[in-house]
Amino acid sequence: MSATEFHPVPISALTRPLPRWIITGLGLLVLVGAGTFLLGASGRNPLRAWQAYLVNFLFWSGIGQAGLVFASIQEMTGARWGHPIRRIAEAMAAFLPISFLLFLALFFGRGTIFPWVRNPIPQKQAWLNVPFLFTRDAVALLLLGGLSVLFLYFTLRPDAQAAEAVGPRWAWPLYVLLRRGWRGRTAELDRSRRTLAILSPILAILYCLGLTLIAFDLVMSLDPSWSSTLFGAYFFIGNLYVGLACLALLAAAARRLFRLEALITSAQFHDLGKLLFAFCMLSGDFFWSQFLVVWYGNLPEETGFILVRARQLPWAPISWIVLLVCFLGAFLVLLSRRLKEHPAGLSAVATCILLGMWLERFLLVVPSVWRGSSLPLGLPELLITGGFAGLFLLALLAFGRAFPFLPAVTGFENPS
Image (cartoon, rainbow, N blue to C red):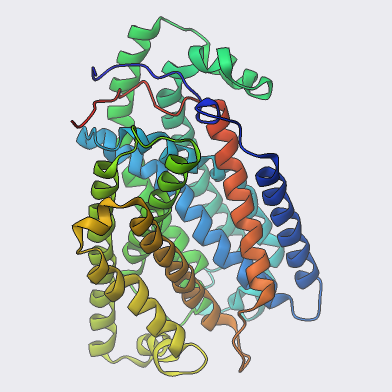
């Protein structure tokens, strides 16, 4: 098969449409999650609702952006192995517009979730003040989101003509926009390749800078006395780690649901498993490097952050679960080549990583603001998380319904 073969088949048309109960179920998840959050935020203890909201905003927004960064890395390296799953990764970015709206909603919980709003710190007030923080974070997210939309525009444009012929009516305005100034398929493919080669490294750099700012402002500022220069890198590397785990799970689900065994083969899962293994080590390395610097520096304003999570109840058991599941356990299990090649096996590991990394984001946020003796992890957190997951999956499925499953811009080459 040639390297530029065109596959104008939308993901939902590869076999049968998704059962209606799946869409209905996801919609119900969103409604229940939203209702749970609103009830909690307007109740006696709004902090519990807002901290669950922030944890899920960071977790799901990170996954959405990581999918597009994966596509940009594929573009920069000229990798072909990931072509059958690249559009799934790009579809994860469909959550980003929703993510930006969810960020704006954080403004209404600023006095509840951010301690420096209630008790300003004079020495840090120039940086930690509401107008400046929300403005700079909004600008960072808009820049990153705008570049992401531009990246998607050029990766989707060569597919617009074929997608319009079989796509849903609600997506026609998108097709019209993508086809404006159409020059022919060959010219559009060449233009997209050249443009994406320029955009990809810019997107990767802006991702690192933008996520570092978000980590400092929305996580580190929850404990204003604590600071770490390595935290930004640790945060965005962790996002890529969880994004790859989500991609592995989605690829396995798409393979089974749409009968893509001949297209998404064990070779793709093996390579994806190797990337997961690499990011398991890389995120563990950043964690250990940060831990060593803080621990051996032995400064009270730095060690307190770790001591609370590592030695105090109810956080210490969760810290050990995260360490064992996301780093030590994943490292040992992903040593197996056979497991990485098996969709079900890799999916099981990816699911554990996703759950573990959600707990890791929970640990980054909640101990800094929660002052109760009990663990604030129960049904409300589960339902709010389900609402975010439903939003993410609905956005992803809408994207997959509208655009071809295989991007024309890079083509597909059978590894065999």
